[in-house]
Image 1 (cartoon, rainbow, N blue to C red):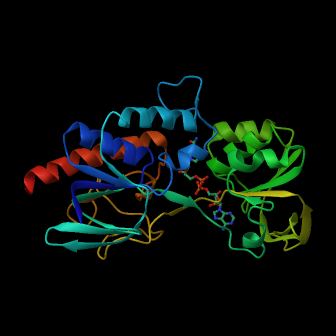
Image 2 (image 1 turned 180 degrees about the vertical axis):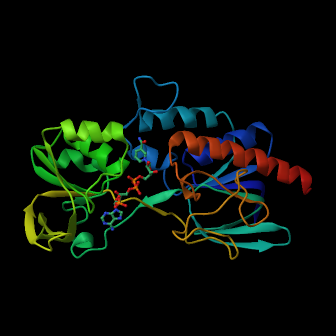
Image 3 (image 1 turned 120 degrees about the horizontal axis):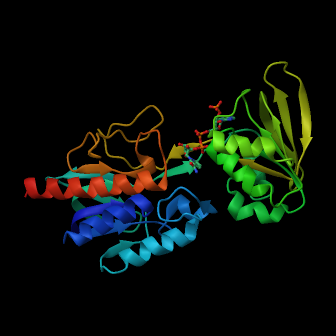
Length: 306
Ligand code: NAP
């Protein structure tokens, strides 16, 4: 079994930064990322709040720069994902789908996944009208009428992106006030292609072989109707990409990992960074900060427990 001083799970901005800091400190590092490095950022059209890019930067462009920096170092990268973690004689053994590794410290940076609505038709029409990524699928709906579901930053930002492509957007929100930042709200209110359906709940995705509409219900009056759209984008938040955590690792009620301000979890030698962490502000910049802090403290842990 391969052994590491520190093993990083997940290759988004938090994982990349943690790896960079540890490798620069001469620590023996390994990491596992089941897809290409970059995580959700690769699915983000434009990032306009990362310092150093006053005109904004495409998600993939930023990740290209991150990975170019990391590529200066040689280290073991497993294109794989964690299935299980167990502790064994002062180290942790991580079971990946194709092998096992052992490490004295772990940094969990597996991020979060888009949440599903869980309504009838969602599974059937995913990829046939229902999507979770405007940048990936928006182009298929050029000139068509679509709906976006949710009222947070993602729903607002992605609606603004889609409005450049589609004919009309119904923004379906379950309450009477949007949650997303005011700067996005102002743009949404000014966009003639976007109609907000407040107090509205999507109850079913309808169609035959592909999506033709969404059954909706007014949360206040209970009145029901069919909204004719060929595309539906679900942006209702994030769930932790977990399922492999070791026993005793404390999480919040939603399953995100609890840490202290040093990114230390409830288990010695296990750190968490980025979107997988229980926190309010999930941004590339906060993920980078988390990754650096976790790496710094993992290094300190290795020094004090050698
Ligand atoms: P979010 O902030 O958790 O918002 C989720 C939205 O979906 C809320 O409006 C919520 O309604 C609604 N919702 C949740 N469950 C629902 C359900 N079952 N049915 C219908 N509606 C439901 O998630 P997010 O917008 O994906 O953002 C996630 C994090 O990333 C946030 O911290 C956000 O600030 C950050 N983010 C930042 C940026 C940026 O700054 N550029 C861009 C994107 C995301 P309620 O309002 O009623 O709860």
